[in-house]
Length: 213
Image 1 (cartoon, rainbow, N blue to C red):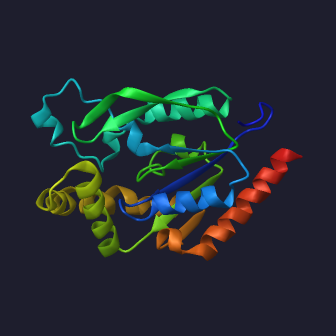
Image 2 (tube, one colour; image 1 turned 90 degrees about the vertical axis):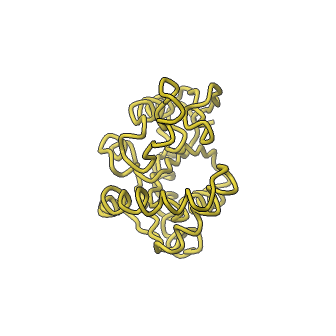
């Protein structure tokens, strides 16, 4: 757990769906295995939709900024940065609403905020020490999303492709791609770009060493 006189380092990892954000996050965690690290996924902070009929939930645009409860995410990040634990929400993608279960998380030395639209909200960016954008070609992103949604979220091939063409792609071009200009570091091809990850790790080490002084 982070020492109470030290401010946690907050790293934002953004990029399109299937860009490789998770592999970059995993690489960061491996680089700082000697530090306590917490990952806060924006995907866990989709808005609760239990008040809507299931048929309406099926039409949810998960790639639009309005889909996220950023107010809650920001409140939780501020609590963690002030050395207080939080109850992180869980999301049920089969029911298309927030789960009744939560996960208690403790403050750590390094907090990684991961999500497609974390650089779209100025309030979130203001909390970050380093902003990363994972930039990956569209063909790789759709293949990865296809595999994930079928294997992990119980979706059909047709539904994933239809959603990509009608929602994911236009939302990426309108909302996600433009946030790349706010990134401090752009990492092409995700976790396979070891040079970019090493450079970022060096920067994080410098920030951590200053907080240790």
